[in-house]
Length: 242
Length: 255
Ligand SMILES: Nc1ncnc2c1ncn2[C@@H]1O[C@H](COP(=O)(O)OP(=O)(O)O)[C@@H](O)[C@H]1O
Ligand SMILES: [Mg+2]
Image (cartoon, rainbow over all chains, first blue to last red; front, side, top):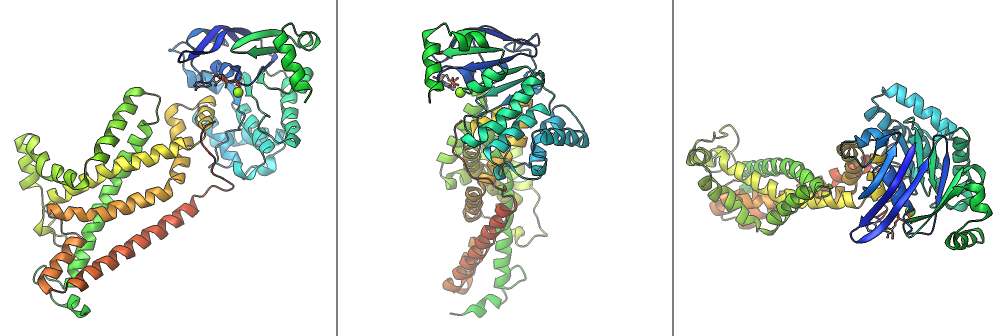
């Protein structure tokens, strides 16, 4: 489904991604972790072409992301993305946030888009908030709306970039619950997160990054059982004991 | 003080001196409004161009802003009015200077031609566009970068992101500085008198020359300027309230 082959990227002379190779099969949940600044956001944003890269190839459903002939908006419409800071559109009601792209990108009718959006809003438990604006919702609620917004496009895969790290601790679980449910339904997911509880529960594989390199890429049980690199061990003990 | 002088019959235009002031106000508003349309449209395009991921567009837009912002307004007024007709093909220049139709039915238009009005509007409009562009640019750049990413990530094209995501917020944020840009056009419109447009300041000067009531003439003009300024400020406050986003707290830029 998502196939990264020897992806390298430079910001000027600084190499952020070094020969990153990994894949996410259909229905698979892959958690990406690693220290801050290791290139996790850059890697996940390369998958839907938000970050261009200079070397290597990325295929999503067989379509090459780096190929200049690829219709990126069309490709992105089918890959959901959830951001650290939610990034709902503040001047639009929750309903409008959920319907904008369905109407403008997929060409759905307003009624159809609204029906779909409200169904998903109900699914994340926020139907009663449909006429509010993002600024009137808590962080956890906003992030659940952002997930519903991404799902409203019927994505073939979902990308998450630290979806809970901007949240107050008491709101983290309401968002993780939605993600766990999604994973259990078989959604293909690539998730940058430090929530190791989430990884243990639903991840199939864990990718550990450091200094732009994929240092570990192994099944979940191997990762938590005996991470092979010292760097991964150091990272794990740091985030698990605090 | 002798305010009654304003009600005396003026020597031309078939109206009182108060009529002269009203006619001047009409032309001040006409120049300001037309120039604002240009400033807003061109300024928005140039401001957006300064933020797009296309080096050539950014360069052209930056050049525009620096050029128009750094030449004194009065010089620009003379460039448009005196120099421009001389550097374009002679036929066109002659047409501009001599054959542009007069707006005879409008108050006091007989004394200046449509070319003077047009030059003033172009000059003020394109000059203010450079300032509006900077406001639009800073409005866009004050939004979190993730907003554009989120728009693109959901499948919108870049123009759609500007249309539906960034510009609606950017325009809301810049209402206060845009108000002051509009008021600047309004006040700068008095420079149009240097090329012969009989706007409010020109009319009050004319009244003071005919009646020797300098104090009354310019006080009246001042009060009219203040009244319009206040009206604009109140109108823009009302607009700001109307489009306010519920629950929105301005955030810093970055991501
Ligand atoms: N636009 C940019 N220009 C230059 N350097 C950048 C830019 N974006 C990110 N970086 C650098 O790239 C590295 C990886 O960033 P990022 O992918 O955001 O890391 P992570 O998400 O793992 O914290 C960091 O060192 C960061 O400073
Ligand atoms: Mg990051």
